[in-house]
Amino acid sequence: MSFELLQPDSLPGALKALAQHGDEAKVLAGGTAIVLMLQQKLIAPTVLVSVGRIPDLAYIRSEPDGIHVGPLTTLRDMERSLVIQTHFPLLAQASGEVGNIRVRNQATLGGNLAEADYASDPPTALLALGTQVTATSLRGERTIPLEDFLIGFYTTDLEPDELITDVFIPASAPGSRTTYLKYRSRSSEDRPCACVAAIAAFEAETCTDLRVAVGAASEVPQRLPAVENLARGQALTDELIGEIAAGYADNIDTLEDIRGSAWYRTQMIRIHVVRALEELRNGRR
Ligand SMILES: Cc1cc2nc3c(=O)[nH]c(=O)nc-3n(C[C@H](O)[C@H](O)[C@H](O)COP(=O)(O)OP(=O)(O)OC[C@H]3O[C@@H](n4cnc5c(N)ncnc54)[C@H](O)[C@@H]3O)c2cc1C
Image (cartoon, rainbow, N blue to C red; front, side, top):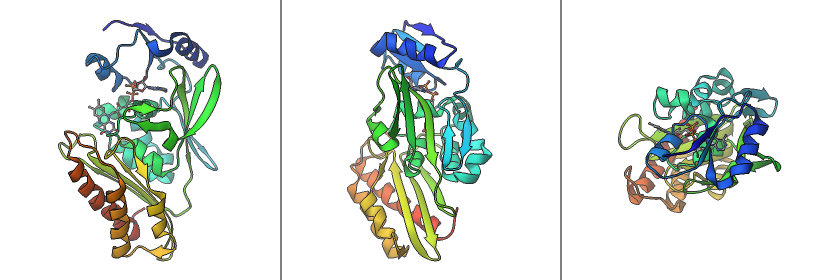
């Protein structure tokens, strides 16, 4: 393992280094994922661009229409943030489910999204929340909806010279109920075998909006708007919940790995979508 370590102390300095070295360079943030990839020789960059000395990339900023989270914000800071706990409990919950406290103290949001490991927690919650990712290079800035940012197995829409510089999470409808369910098949600190993030708004017993994202079961987390729409204007009866859960289980092309077979994951999706929707109907916020 041999590489040059660059530690720019400004955003333009980091962008310049990435533009200069192109495919040969990799960004280093908290290091929890990339160090393992280097050790296992899955990647062999000649240059590592550490972003840890760039000021002002770790923040949680509340705006009237949502929150901006900086890419260097740690998952532990997101889990503990009062703003996130109060207005985006789903995100606080999903962040708090990652690995263990040592990992969360080090792991950053930008690194979690850029890694694009299918067996991750925050992306599923962020997909349900309608998140947008801002990527910046010397060529300019662009904002990408998360569903277009995560494009496949460990693959994102990021160009080699781009850095994630902001993550925007729009506010949900007032009074929305949310839940995040993580199913682990091996140990209490493991990555998910399947996970479900759900958000619903109600008027009395009637569901006026439902968003459900299922993660860790396929290459990228998925929402199925046609299935979500079954709930609009309806009471969440046991029968309707079963129909929505079947819609997710039957239409997600599940993968197989050490955490479970494709068949097993399909069953776990069905069960956890049912549990999530029952929680929302029964009043959990
Ligand atoms: C023991 C262990 C258990 C874990 N358990 C879970 C779990 O249960 N759930 C879960 O979701 N995750 C889990 N993880 C993964 C962890 O959350 C991610 O590894 C972490 O969030 C990555 O962030 P980082 O700052 O360490 O990224 P790094 O390791 O520094 O980088 C990861 C990738 O992102 C790129 N990158 C980093 N920052 C940026 C940026 N701003 N712009 C562009 N590219 C960037 C890097 O080049 C690299 O490709 C676990 C990890 C470990 C080691």
